[in-house]
Image 1 (cartoon, helix red, strand yellow):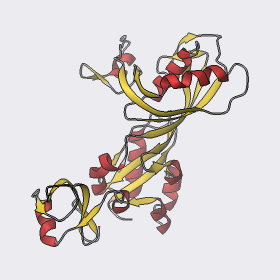
Image 2 (spheres, rainbow, N blue to C red; image 1 turned 30 degrees about the vertical axis):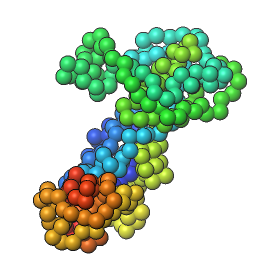
Image 3 (spheres, helix red, strand yellow; image 1 turned 180 degrees about the vertical axis):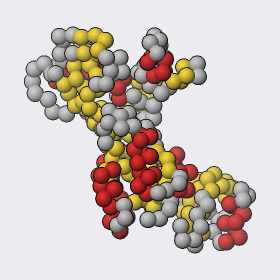
Length: 296
């Protein structure tokens, strides 16, 4: 398998993202690996992994837009806003399909959202979840997030014990908070009982490979079917070919003169990615340099 590129893991429930990455690192015997967008142990789905020099391209490949499918169970609120938490409040009031549909526009577009107390956000330099686990009363500050689309799955008439939604949202959106707030909006209480990420930028659920399948294919050519080469991941960015001298200067952090339209480009040398760079007034300046040698 090549040394630089992306593998789209279908993270199972029950393990952390860090454990999933550790398992992949062991299976592939790779030295450098990173992941984009942590998933809680309760959550499953798309976890893009960057391997080798591809770790430098994460910010340009893994778009901030993500898609999730999640189920809200009504009648209880929990301290973690998901099924792993302790019950903090209960109600007999359950929402109807019409009430849920009427509530959705309130959570679409630019909205203010209060993150869960059990989150990795820092308060005075310490993770909020550590303070919450220590028994502190954690007060989270509302912040702006972007919800691009929010849809309710088909639901029978009458009071609903649970409902499933699909959401497309921007960076920093907490689905657990969204579930909690939807339930409150319809005069009920609720928590996330199922959460699956189905998309991260260009990486989709259909591209993902499970840990079990990865272990099965790791020493076979079939693994290439799950591999996204760095060149392919960057193929929506205009490319410019450089000669060896230009490439050397660029890798040394120097600007080079080029005949190209202005903006972000992928600088290539002999067909291999050399750098992500910006063209301004005819000068190409490196943004991220990739140290990929022939044969990598």
